[in-house]
Image 1 (tube, one colour):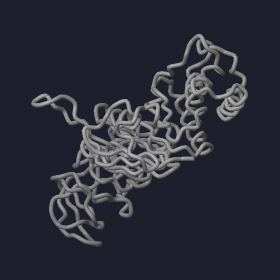
Image 2: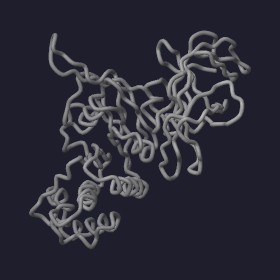
Image 3: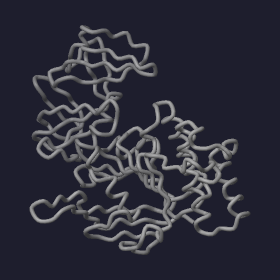
Image 4: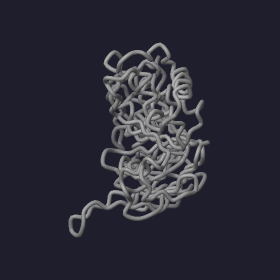
Length: 358
């Protein structure tokens, strides 16, 4: 049965005195049974350290970690009923796939017949029944990652931990394995925590995403929350590709019929309180037009991607990226107007970067 996970006031400090470095700063996260939580952030933000604390490979300097309601700080990793999948596959090269999957069960003295049954169930779930007699050296990268997941799954743990498991795979395999991991979670229902620096993995896999920076939890929410209602400019620019456009200016008239000015241009839309502010707009929420517009610019770069075309426009507010249809015929040097969708704007404090209410 899936377990809950509570991360309560977790701090982690490495070193002492003047050389002390605080890598986790009072992290608070509640993970519901069966949830798939993504920890995302750049290298050095503390996400892998937090995962290691959950696994028991590191002890927190402060705070509690509760699995199924029980505080497991100080409890050995082997006693936490957790399975972990690493970036490296960590398979035993001299063992067959079946023996790799069943190794943890063998160590637990699970009877042979029960072990065989569980190996067969896991192999069927991962669609690797035809590989059970092979050695790891005879497998592709994607197949090895499936075996690593199978070894963790065979134990039927309370909690699944993934530490950047797709980093070693090529782009096509990453897409395939993302779908495989999502399907696996839907079938197993095991509570999962997944660490990645890849915001596309975060958006496609997680039921909730925790965005981290410098050991601080910046925002936690559904992919829709994180993408459409970022808590600050850091989250706004870290999540989304291409990144959100940020335009610094001044709110002259606040309210539903507001006015926002920036570098000689003016937009009329719903605005926050009067004063300095930063307008955030996703590339898909800006339209390029040929007619008159209050905000104008010159096309600098056109980037076809197949499904979409990205157009980079030089404007008075700097370069702005616009997502257009693949059939768009814009070319470098074109003079264009930019129209912002007023229903899809985000506002932030220019001074602090924090989201502003409208």
